[in-house]
Amino acid sequence: MFEATRRDGVCRLVRPNTRWLSTGYAGGESPADAAFNVTVPEGWPETDLDAYIERRLSAAGFDERGPTLLTGVGQEHARRARFGPVEVVATAGVSNPAELPIDDDPSGGGDASPASDAAAGDGRVERKDRDDPVGTVNVFVGTTRALEPGALPNLVAVAAEAKAATLLAHCGAPGTTTDAVVAACDPAGDPVTFSGSATEVGNAARVCVRDAVRASLDSRYDAEPIPRGVGEARYGVVADDRATVSPV
Image (cartoon, rainbow, N blue to C red; front, side):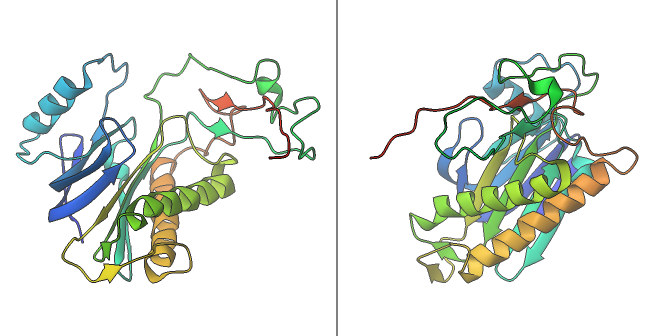
């Protein structure tokens, strides 16, 4: 589905006349011919993201503009997965996991149970002593089908769910502090009303997200162990606060 080009730390995914929906910076739904995944360098100081993205895309020689995600993971770790009417391209790094402890108190009351000793105390752990860029799991999921207005954002949810399941199995956290998803569909394709997990598109998306994220993790952590949660990571957060829960 995507014509992929990697150059100068930028991965361009081209598919003309595509509907994109991004959860990243300057996101939302838009028509475009391409989307981009941009690796930021160590010690990245930028605050004007529009200008930074423009400089990076121009320097890489790309004329198209479209949804753009940023990551500390090198594009050499990008992996593509295809199944049925779906394709996924993902980069995955987990140096900044976001844990969500689940205990045996469904009411939301009681004392917090931190997921690790490092997380005890304030519900938020920050490790500032990292010497490499923070990781991110960026997922681009596209289908050759034409999705109804509600089915495109639902594809984002399906992809995020599959990403969370994959990360829980590999690093003990459902995501990182900076994850993002871009979903895409072909407005000229066969129309599809639903994209849930039991549909052809939803099932294929789950399979592709799992396999692309897992392959990217294997590439990124080929020579070092994958951090298992905040206790082993350079940076991360733990949501161990408790909400007040009541009947509706």
